[in-house]
Structures are given as C-alpha cells and as structure tokens.
Amino acid sequence: MTIQRMDNVGIVVDDLDAAVAFFTELGMELEGRMPIEGSWAGNVVGLEGMRSEIAMMRIPDAPGRLELAKYHTPKAITPKPEITPANTLGLHRVMFAVDDIEDTLARLRPLGAELVGEVTRYEDSYLLCYLRGPSGIILALAEQLS
Image (cartoon, rainbow, N blue to C red; front, top):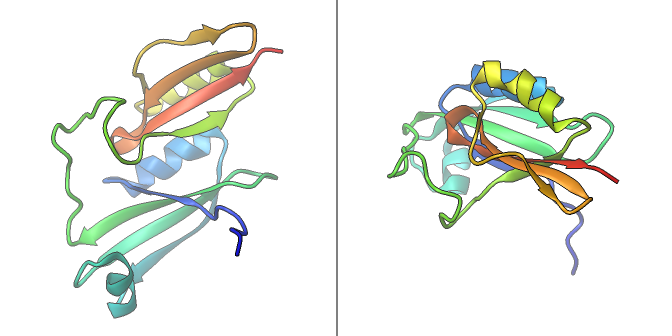
C-alpha cells in the first residue's frame, strides 16, 4: 500500500478571519469555509462536544492546502510558553516557495507577520527566513536565486 498524496496540513488558530486574510495575502485562495460539529467530528479528534469552523486554503494551480480551524468548544489550548522556539517538538513550520521574499514580507507585516530570525542567504541558491503569522504559526519562506 502506498500513500496517494498529502491532502492538507491542519493548523488551529484563534482568529479565523485574520488567518484567512493572512494566507490570502500570501497568495493562497479560500477554497471553502464551514462549521464542523457533531459526534462524528468529536470522535475523529477525540474531543467530546467538539464544535469548530474550518477554512480550507489552497495554492492556486498547484497542490497544497491548509486547513485552518477555529475551535469554539472545547476552547483551543495555548501552549506554554506561548511563543515556542523553533526546536519545540511537534508541528514545526510550513514552508512556502515565493518569487520575492522581501515583497512577501512587506505585504505580510501589516497583517502581523514578524521575522523569527533574519532573512539569510544559503550559498547561491536561496534566500530563507522564518516568520510568525496569526496565532503564532511559524512559516518559512524560500526564494530561489538560481
């Protein structure tokens, strides 16, 4: 048996509208938005009485989707420390290839994006950076140079 594809990456956020606006500015498109609730949903994620809303974001003309989820009940849990460092176990980051890293950062900063470190050159191949987006999500951006 083989894997057919990676369908999406799920990210829990505290403000779904802000997260949708952020990823739209990054260049993704909103594929759909809907409530998720009922015993089937709670059974899947192991949370009794679960009620949430999701927004599915997709990359235009390419594979790759993000499922952004806002939990209404039970409420989302904030990790301690709230802003975890890059070496924290678990989901680490989502990386996007972009045409122009500086332009992308300029567009995302008004929506709350903050660099984790700095934009760094890797040999003659890439400009790379980590940034925090909505709900502390860590994104990596890569601009191919050659």
